[in-house]
Image 1 (cartoon, rainbow, N blue to C red):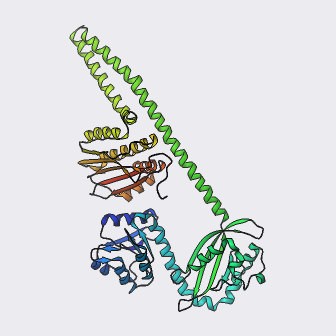
Image 2: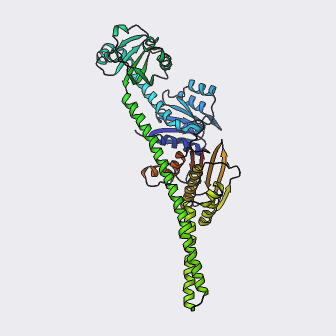
Image 3: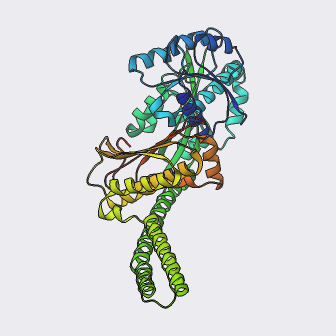
Length: 491
């Protein structure tokens, strides 16, 4: 798929970056032109210059509705999608009536790529419909000869859902004869259970929605349940009135079974991934205990013995060497202590998540010569142990990334409660980075830091918001349920 030429009307650079990132995450490549106001938008836009227009609804000197009206005066088919922070139902209806293809809320940008795909498909469908409608009406006889040989199920309906044509494949699948169907309503044929669903689906057809698609489970002539994918297309006269409906059905039972198997496999994979992380945490706990109880105590004893030997006399050279051994042992002991803290800080179990994060932040800030800022006054008190571990590891990885890459002067860490969930914010005023480039490196395996953070948060049932741009610092905002297994609110 060639890159889409996108005109983006947005006065907030961060929101513009998020919208383009959502398109990229949805697999849509873009050549964006970003403008921030009326003059720039109306100068940039020209018929045929763009494949898609994305527009914020409210700007200081312009509105998305005004931009829509400007575009529609020049071009009727170019997809126009509003991306707004808040938009009421009445306003949404008004924009759709004015010719907007769709609207997406800024807090639901995951919908923008599917909405764009639908808009592009609708444009292609409308263009195809307008180009071929006259030819279809003139070639009815040839059409009938062709469709009767198709393996796909084909039925044609009048606007009141009366059956005007069925092909042999349709009759064979449902075990019916054509003469028992022609002239009857399709709603009577499908039965009461599916009647209302079909009425709603076909009722959506209109000049703005030439094609509707749906998957439905139906019983064939032998009573076996099969999944069918139906594509229904409206045929309209030059005044935009619906004259006929054609529905084409394809048996997609095997596809549904494969998708269900894939979903089950993904659930199993997440379970295995969670188990792997649990095993890693268990091993880290054992290693930390062994280092502290065995190696640490042995080195402590060695240090005591060497210090005692140094005090017992025996020559200045010997004493000097023994003192050097004592210093070496002391350094080794300190190294073991730091290693133990890195693997699993004792504060996490002894004093809780907030204390462990504070200690880790202060220690890493000293190493990186940063000014630390910590806040945990409204952090929840009762947190599942697994959630504490996940939150600590995410903070650990985020802080490590700041020290390695950010070149920051200050580092802020905040632990708080948001919407009944544990929330963690790690922010710096460093160099920032290209978020999409980092995601691509992670997908290729070149850099797993961001991937590790996303996977840990997902396995814990949490959410992640990451904001960064070159020269603007970075914000990592993660939320977690207070108990493992709790779902995200609203999911």
